[in-house]
Length: 389
Image (cartoon, rainbow, N blue to C red):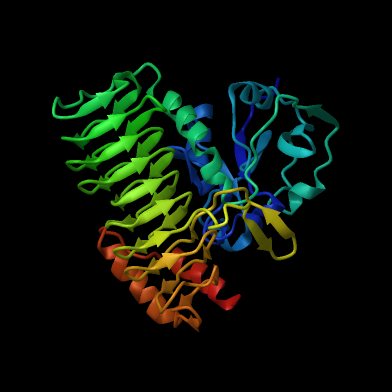
């Protein structure tokens, strides 16, 4: 049997349905659970994986595809049986479930774009009949986050011993709590009976934080004093979180440092929610939420859907977002009354357009606060998006 030379996570052609998060990243860089999709696959496979995405994002990712390669649909969440099936694929074999491609194996070296994947014709198709979770819409990230946290918790902690928990804390189901090296947790209430709690390297949980699992807080992230967290919630690396948060994801480097409610929401990277910012996650008539998606008609999102905010966006103090508000990338959101439910990329206020140079300067200012700087690659990617307006 010929050895596998490389593994590639590919975006599906339907990646646009995951906007606003895929404006600025490949599907493989979305965080759900504790890890990003790419990080999860690298742990499972015990090696680095490559990423195939849209051309304007591809420079971010290695894509030196050669030899026998297994291509994996980045939108499909793995399980142990699926992993075995994928690793068992032979050249020109494809694994699929209900016409969704899970993975395929090829010796060909002519797949360089996500469009090239459409031209792959397998010699043999294997049906996977055990069911899958495949991300299609952004609100599904919160719907699946509890299972993802549980899966990642087992993956990250198997065979390891948690760092000790200070006696100042009040714990329920302590065996379901894992604290990484350098984390500071004092005078907190943590209930892991409903799902595991993972506290990352050098994270800080300030006094009075109240947490119900499933919950994950990433490296160097901070929970402010008195934070009230309901599962399933992920606070990504280098985030600052406070107030009341329920069943939400902050992907990384973002701030919700003050009081206000965030529920069934997904916040991208490098965002800032001003003091008192809140979102609605349920319609006031308790009916299902219908979301209009250009080119795809109306989609039923179920009973709950909060704020979906793209990278580099900010809201003013006391901003109140309606149920199922979609804010694009690099927006400065302020104004009287409720913001629109659809906020385009580079919005200034509710209806203006951000000056591009000003937007880049402001992003740089925010990145400096976390000892980072905007890269040439980021500026080029944002300029591409700006020109699409």
